[in-house]
Image 1: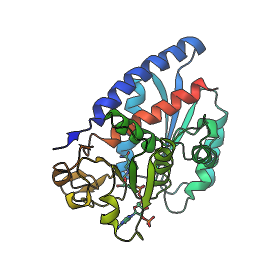
Image 2 (image 1 turned 180 degrees about the horizontal axis):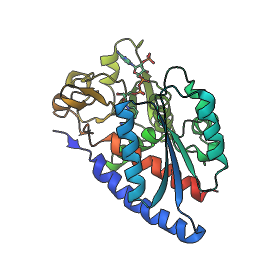
Image 3 (image 1 turned 60 degrees about the vertical axis):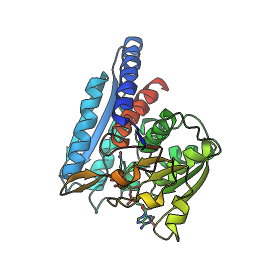
Length: 281
Ligand code: NDP
């Protein structure tokens, strides 16, 4: 029976430390660390994520600046705001909540954020630094949180076979780069991968970011593996992950629950990136 990795508890501890760091920054600089959060449209899931992020800022003595745009807002209006926030000395981090409406080119907007204020770590400069192993760039929040969750188990990443299912720019690719940096042997799987089960069954560390409920079943998991479930799928029964939790927990050594695993760590890492950004000025 797997040990459940308590992402919520770990995120709370990280937020307590962040509160101390944010308060030290305020004493030193005479102003609070600031995070600007931009949302476009009425997607209910995005509204919940943004509200959680703003609440977390309050808990950590970080000032939040919230901007809500109508669904029909133009790309140039959004970019104008980003430019204004880039110049605002009270703003250390800028977050554009994804997804954006279809008429807006996400990459075009994200690339306008100053890399030093890129709280989500999605800017090409920061993604490039991650892939080159250069220090000082903001690391994408969910991948950064995943590494902390794995480390919290006490299982060493070095030399292990890590399998990542999913190759998105926000989860799969950056988490694969981070696992490689931590000396894992990394295999990345995607929708064209053949014999997926044979590959996942070899994983000492299995990270799943597919977006399909109960996609990974117990027969696909190596006994004793560390299983990180990134999925957040909303269905009739509420929120569920990409991993069949009840089946896989009988086989794995460690497993993250959904909710209470990766999600809270993503928020904690967003605030970490913001406080890091303020201190790097
Ligand atoms: P994307 O839709 O961008 O990527 C999904 C990936 O899964 C793609 O690379 C796709 O392959 C791959 N995939 C799809 N079907 C299969 C299959 N049958 N076999 C193997 N691989 C497959 O999703 P994201 O990475 O943005 O998100 C994944 C999940 O994680 C979602 O549920 C999302 O809500 C959640 N999420 C949770 C976060 C958190 O904080 N907890 C943060 C971000 C995301 P291909 O590239 O070939 O299409």
